[in-house]
View (cartoon, rainbow, N blue to C red):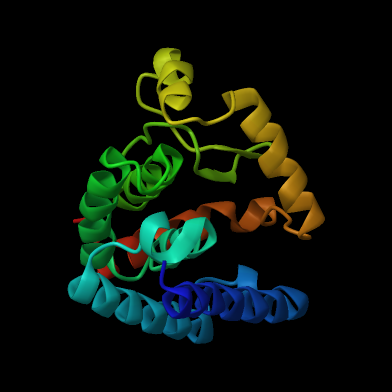
Amino acid sequence: MDQSLRQRLIGMVEDSRRLRAVLAADGSLFQGYNEQLRNLHNSHAKALADIVDAQGWPGKSKAGEDGAAAAWMIVQQAIGLPRFMRACLEVLEAAAAKGDVPRWQVALLTDRICWLEGRPQVYGTQFDWDDKGELSPVPIADEATVEARRALCDLIPLAEGIRQRRAEAQQNGETPPPPAEAASRRRDFDDWAKAIGWRS
């Protein structure tokens, strides 16, 4: 295992967490994709892309379990870079097939890409505020069989996942947008997704 690589990946995620906490405290985190946070995420994505180009995906054999989890988190955060995220999903799937990363990482990245592309998610891991002001999974394809798919990727049952996500949001001080702003928020997100290249 490469301890330097491990520490570098973990350090990038810690930098993102620190900035996110600052932005959450002043309220700017919840007003669209903050430019400062976007720039940091893009910088981390470029660094990870260089690592992958040089030595392949930094799974647990190269970066330890926490370093590999940090690499996955860097991809999850790179929502402004569609081609990068899609390319990483292919590499991550290959790493999971070899047992070098857990299957749940593939599941969450798959769902995140589906959500950004405006397609139903596969595993039920992506959430948004619903019309009742609750965090709920965004639409799921073939929801009747989602529990079987989640089990294959070592994900907890969906109902438990919903409870956990809502508890996490409450702990982090996340609140639903005012009802009067919900429609415009969705339009803004759709416009952003099209401008970035997630949707046509």
